Image 1 (cartoon, rainbow, N blue to C red):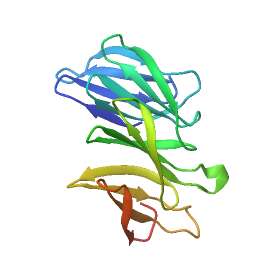
Image 2: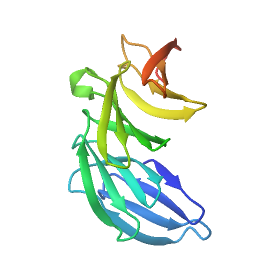
Image 3: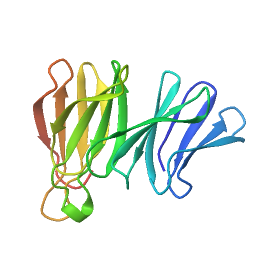
Image 4: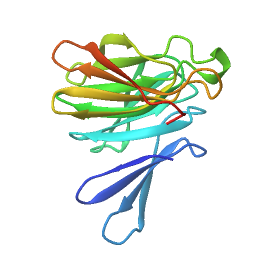
Amino acid sequence: DLMDLDSDCIYVACSGDNAIQMLDRATGSHLRYIPVAASCNPYDVVKAGDFLYVTGLFTDKVYKLSLQSFSLVASLDVGTAPQGLCAAGGRLFVCNTGGYQNNYANSSVSVIDLASFSVEATLPVWANPQFAVARDGYLHVSCTGNWSDLAGKVDVIDLSTLQRVQRLDIGGNP
């Protein structure tokens, strides 16, 4: 299970519970569960503004949870089997693995405009993107490959143009 945190809370994606668990950062005590959606299998959670964004691995969706009402306020269709999330510059980046059952075909990153909560672009990437980090104007996407004949790579995307500018052949399965 992946998590995010702010100055007060830790937010943990609980896949079996289909919820986000909120913990008090100072004490570690349980505050509440925020339900996501039935059978969605939350994979990752990221906080941006007054909202939590959660990938639904089994539903091919990203969910938007309000930290005011502690409830689901919207969902959005993305690519197949979304996993890692990254928020930067008013956008949410969703790593769509393509799914094990599809040998990670059509792996992509969905670019979501947070203001309108709509898909701005879908960027093709190397096989099985699982995590992304935005730094210094670039999105770095860690793509695991397929665990057999496709080795891992890191795709580097320019955030100003949303174009891939580099693919690093790192080998193995990051």
